[in-house]
Length: 321
View 1 (cartoon, one colour):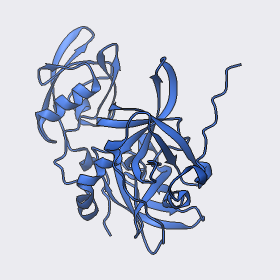
View 2 (cartoon, rainbow, N blue to C red; view 1 turned 90 degrees about the horizontal axis):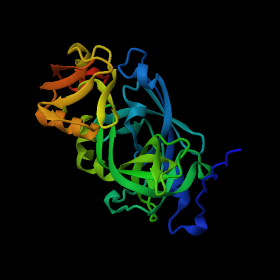
View 3 (cartoon, rainbow, N blue to C red; view 1 turned 30 degrees about the horizontal axis):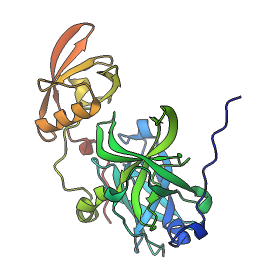
View 4 (cartoon, rainbow, N blue to C red; view 1 turned 120 degrees about the vertical axis):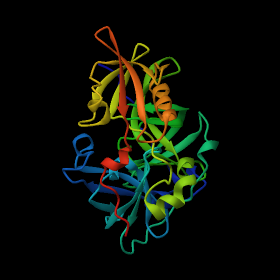
């Protein structure tokens, strides 16, 4: 029989130099209902749940954006079982982070933001989900590196931790001083050391929210010029980029890109990785720019032009209160 993976260890107060209960109480449960006609409903579902971290004493919660994108109804639950209605303040496409606000008086403790750029491979951290100490695990940073997601998402320096948190979406990653240094995004299985696969999480660094924080809470957006979005989902196969899916009625589908096409060039430059492709697309111009693309289909080379859009225009936007 295969050997069972060891159970993650939970943090203990006697091993820490900060108040563990404070950060446990600041991590809340987030449950959202999304309308059936929302753009993301078919992919992410209409009922989503995860975690968030209170970062301001008035009940402002930082979470991972895919939980709250296009949310119509939000409930925020603390460790005492109290539930508070909430609303989406902002979602940033580039970082993948979202901000939600409790409605009414919540009396929730807030945490201090740390500096994620100080975090290094090998550092010990605590990854915390809603539910108290049993939902917090001791973890270690196993890598800080680039991450590219097929949904046209790229982080220059994502943080990877192990072991994996079982309910990773919107978890808080805390340093050894009890400061928030990242928000959990994904379950990742990757090779490490002797190439043995390790189950872990991809964490969005907290530093990414700082330059756009004030604009997000006042305007509901990051304030940045939107990047061109293609609605073309590619995967890397033997140093080639293969179209694995297309957004329904998206720009790439309209340009006659087809599943199975091999993406050879973007604007005349060869690309072989997702990161190369995204950076090349974004270098052409802002959302709305025409993106020249060369694909190989059944041995034939085709030059196409994709009329990009701003992805945010397809989403139901947050309602500011």
